[in-house]
Length: 262
Image (cartoon, rainbow, N blue to C red; front, side, top):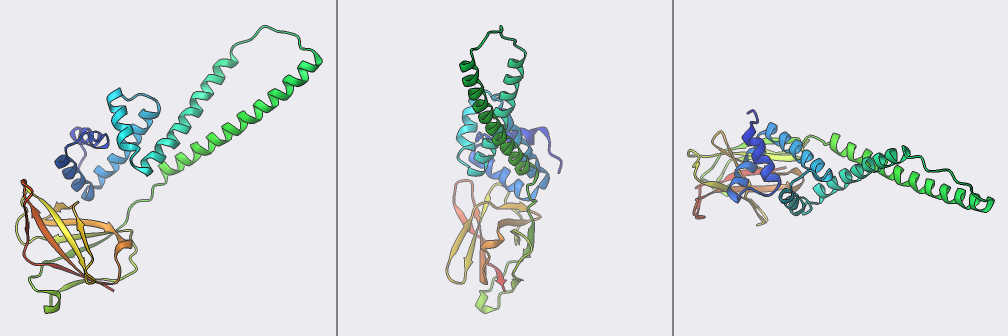
């Protein structure tokens, strides 16, 4: 699906923390399944970082940017890299401007000439060190922005079963290791999607460990969930789907989805 102007506006509001919780959840569901939208989010994020460093953001957006971005370590690092590059560029323009000014000549004594030469050498060394550091910042920033590894997915489609695992419920088999960094599960719903509600999924391991997944996308009459492949260990899993009504009341969909990791 093509990204339109309304999507771009929503993405910017999302990155600045201006969306209501319900609007955030809707956008996050789309980001799980729409690759074009996710790529656009990364572009807008980079543009916001550049505008922040160049001090081009309005005062209210700058405050929201600082509150939201600096709470995320990865985004905070990107801002630092961009800031380092920005300071280098600003410093360069100052030096270039200063080189156009010709001071009046004056005469130094021998002692003053030696002292001045030593001071200038020290300053040049410091400037060279600063510039080298900034070049490292610029190179690292460029590398981070241009070498983001694309996320790979191991996708599985599960159908619901009204049986317990012990009673012969059919389990989808997953064999480790996976050649992907993210697991994406399509849980086929037995009834049409309730567009007025959101969905929640519980992942129950045979050891009794329970994980609640609140970010659930809806696609092709399926509840779609994702989690890091590294979290998937050997064993049996059961997934349960809940419908969360607008008022907050939850209703479990009868049946479970089974996963067998070998």
